[in-house]
Image (cartoon, rainbow, N blue to C red; front, side, top):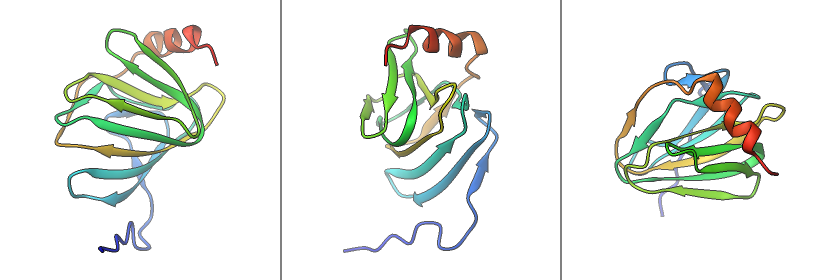
Length: 130
């Protein structure tokens, strides 16, 4: 057994690079996988990115989106999980009227790409069927 101390009394980290909007992260583990508890304010989101070994996203509160490069994906609600396979380009973040908290398990290095445009975000919102 290995007790993972998490942030050990350190303040949450406000994420500004590679994120749009107000996003905070509490690292749980820096090993592979990298595990972070992430809180997104409404409309906040990651940039487009991919993970060498894939990523597991577990939504813990609120609602938001996980969308891949070809536009597939969509809404995610608290209690749901999403697996993005190795190398799949995607973004994730909060819905327009809700916070989203998630635990993200990232396998291998992350390659950050470009910002998700407002138009791309609005397209996901418009196509959502909750």
